[in-house]
Image 1 (cartoon, rainbow, N blue to C red):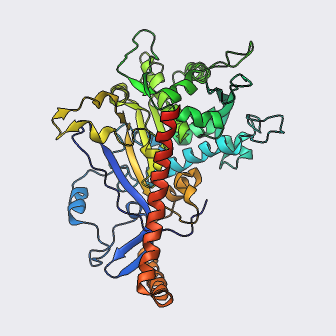
Image 2: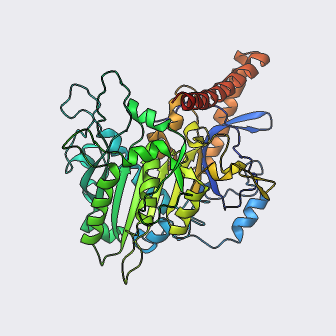
Image 3: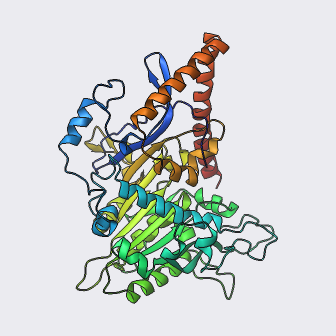
Amino acid sequence: MATKIFTQSPNYSPFLIGDKSTQHKHNLGRVSLSDNTSNKKLLISSSIMSPPLPSSSSQLAPPSSSSSVVAHLPRAPSATLPLSRVWREIQGSNNWENLIDPLSPILQQEITRYGNLLSASYKGFDLNPNSKRYLNCKYGKKSLLKESGIHDPDGYQVTKYIYATPDININPIQNEPSRARWIGYVAVSSDDSVKRLGRRDIVVTFRGTVTNPEWMANLMSSLTPARLDPHNPRPDVKVESGFLSLYTSCESESKFGLESCREQLLSEISRLVNKYKGEDMSITLAGHSMGSSLAHLLAYDIAELGMNKRRGEKDVPVTVFSFAGPRVGNLGFKERCEELGVKVLRITNVNDPITKLPGFLFNENFRALGGVYELPWSCSCYTHVGVELTLDFFDVQNISCVHDLDTYISLVNRPRSSKSTVTEDNFSSNFFNKTSEMMFPKGQHRALRLRNAATKAAFLIGSVSNHMMYCNIF
């Protein structure tokens, strides 16, 4: 989805209060109106994807403190190196250190590639009630990637479709049984792709919320112990009950019902890991919105059960590429994921309210007082996992773009800006502002900017209020 008209986006700097755990956060892709003295500049800023501008351009130069820090950091893998040489770093072996700020072209390429593979989970989903494939995939496994317009559809073979069953009956009068919905797929890289990727890559994709029962599952925001390892339940590791229900529920009402989403996935991943034993391998999970939460749970599940461990060989890295994902669990969940070596790269938009839920008020930023005293609710606070790559975009004509997967991919994949482009943007923005000042009195021009800002604030507050209201009802 291409965005057209953008309003000014405030700098996003969450107030951190004594979080003892390391927070990784990086900004890129700001699309907004930025202030330069009295002028406004319509700038699509991808500064960390661009070469540094000359210091003579004082208005556009980065702060000296940040530039001095970057000067002392070791270099990231060179863009000239093939992916087959640096794939472990791209999968997060070093927590993407020096790969995000500035954004490595190879990492940019891989985020885009996994985002496109993920988009097939939406394009293939059949929502036509009159179709024989209603709530299933419209295409067969052999044609899904091609029909979805994926570049190089022969690079992966889809091996299994995945279904999830919301354990919620939204029509209690008719007492209809829960019905499984197609939610994604498992694929494995082809022999030809292995040469380019440097390993055998097992990919699992999860789409986001589409159906009404899935929306209801999202609103079950109480924390509950995951208890995915039968030999060690770990009651301190807690996740959102709605996500866990979607992950573990099955079609119990039907004699020939599907297994749970979890059972389908663990069975297929175990089969593929055994089939390709002896090869370098990676397990990559890509999810959008609610699908990101399922990707988190699967990654934790695989690592907790030790399915990525092989005797006499390196462990298979488990990586999550999360697009617009909400929080999934508490601090215990985050720490256990880190202990198990699960790597999570969260691509977020500062204007996307979903990434701030659940735990809008009580989260990783408010666990401790003054960095010393743990507050009583600290173990019950939702906490994000992994490294954050932050975008900043908003379209006043299409507010839903703040959570749209295609917009996320477009912004990550935006080409580098050049000095000439910035100069042109300055000219066009100055012309726009001069014209608007002539057309509108000064008071009306200011009111227009304030109205745009108020629209964004109302959207965020409304989304959060609706979420909290439904939590109280259900």
